[in-house]
Length: 266
View (cartoon, rainbow, N blue to C red):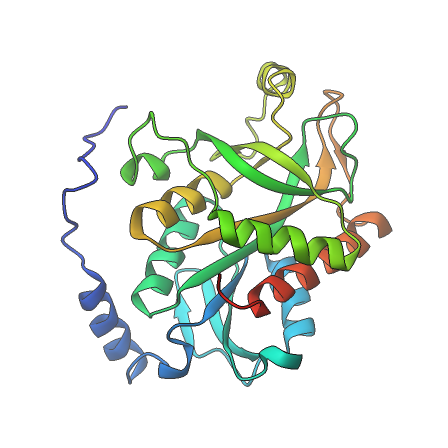
């Protein structure tokens, strides 16, 4: 690594308390107290944000802006009504995702469910398939500032199980397994696609490894659900962003993520 990496116990200069003070000064008031102890739905892409906002009915305009993301308070339906839910996004790429997670932790959110898209590395994972990552190949840079290189990153087990239950109720059957996270969207080379696919990695994205690493490092439970938006396994890029299969699966994935947010903490 061509930079200085500190051990995990080395404390950051910018603490959560200082972050809260700065956010309060910047936004003209204290963090929204009604979100403390709640769950955040992290919608990673602009499309995820639009779909989640349509389904989650945010209560008014954005409360806070953090990096490229906006935070809105939402109302959970049914038995979970009244439980704090924040909709936050977009947060494309590891560095932005890490910033947003740190800010959510500083604001007192206690769980984060992420929803996004991925590119398939397996021929039997077509556009519209769902992926529930169990770990991630760390081919990005941000996670190494949080965990040593030899530490495997993984979702919070209880929250991942909640996502799996919610997916089953929604009629989704996500494939569980490892994914590959990269910083370089246009450097998903044929050699890497072949090698990582042969190793059993299911898909490629730009945030999962970072989300899991930051969550593990700061003690914030995180899990993620991804929908295949494009196919790479055949070494010919097959985009499916505008297909009915992706649009339908994407909406079901967001519904699944919302249901997981509404579930009681275990």
